[in-house]
Length: 394
Ligand SMILES: Nc1ncnc2c1ncn2[C@@H]1O[C@H](COP(=O)(O)OP(=O)(O)OP(=O)(O)O)[C@@H](O)[C@H]1O
Image (cartoon, rainbow, N blue to C red):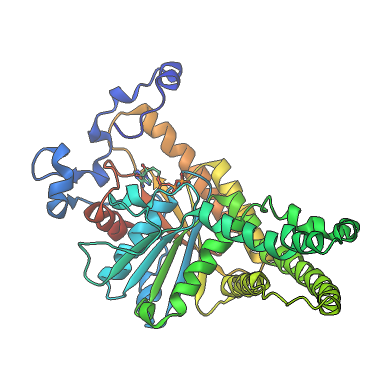
């Protein structure tokens, strides 16, 4: 049963969800052609009688599909508000509107596979069936991304350099160069790094001819805190990697002078190249985040005071970092109840109060608002995503 409070809460309120039959929710009531549990198979035959929005949705999906140029949409917000459902449904809608689309999860706790009801865990692009234009999905493996950075920074600035110095009998000197600890520092990667690498990897993919078909790239990002750290990460990395490379250069020239005296052959070490590449990619991620022409961060929230307060802070941080934000999705909005379900009526009243907050919040009031109703089906699989997307993205 949807919208069931926990049994404890229900008891406390003496308003068990069991008292609320589905008829409390007639405005989004789905008309099942057969029995409701057969939903997966019969989704295409489902209809929504009507969806009464709690407040007017001012949305403009037409603007989102209009251009044939490549566009990036990053969907983010607090954990569990429906980022994945919104991102996946947007990707399906783009594909059904003629845009070859790639949907990527950079959230370390992926749920894209669950959302599409397809195994996407391989770290490669997987075709999604049942849409009109090509739609591919990708879940990036954060551990792999983190390992890549760890080994590059280690080889280049940390133990790699120390090994050379040790082999030359100059270990002591290396110890004295306190800055070498930087490599160790980066051994424990900063938060947000996996997501930054994930995004940069996708961009790398997209640079190749093979992937030039994609016109819409939808990112299902990690929950808010993670995203905020990600925003300041490129600067941090730029500085750190810059330092490592400088140090590496200093040491390399010192050791090569010694090596040439002793007639040792110079080894080619491409770990610096790798690190330099990583740094360049991070800079590209930073540029992508700030490119108003091609990129947009869409905030997903739910109508509760807590979630809206957090969205306001997220919006402020994004603006501070010059990340373009134009749209806000308020998910799981209850339509007006047509039944005597007290729990639903109280809940909706609360939601309306939270929605009013948006109108007076300086960080949120100017954003275009999309309202997504709480639906009484699980949003899973392409037909369900299409159904949900057609309600939300208008
Ligand atoms: N409007 C809605 N109506 C009904 N169920 C919904 C709605 N939006 C999301 N859900 C359900 O809520 C659950 C969480 O949604 P989803 O995975 O999209 O959230 P998320 O923000 O990506 O979560 P996480 O932060 O854990 O990745 C899913 O079971 C999803 O089907």
